[in-house]
Length: 102
Image (cartoon, rainbow, N blue to C red):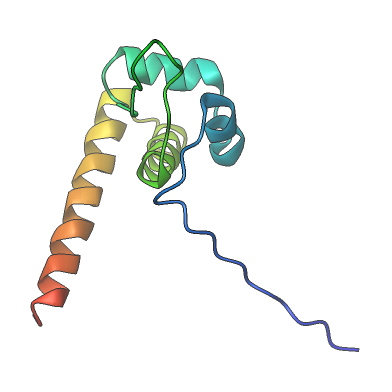
């Protein structure tokens, strides 16, 4: 009997996650995220009135990439953040170029 594989995609671009959800989705600790936020390497949406920060899909991709770079290449957090940011900007530029037909 052949088993079918079903792929489910969830749109997270308009969904906000709290710190605990972000950590579960990315496999990093809350301490890891808080340190990067304190160092200015991760800047989530900070709602008014002292609520906890909210994270979006872009933050998830960034945290995963930063953690991967730090783990796999023993990169310092600042370098991992810079590489993640440059990769994101490159992806945006490529998408704009694709839309223009180039």
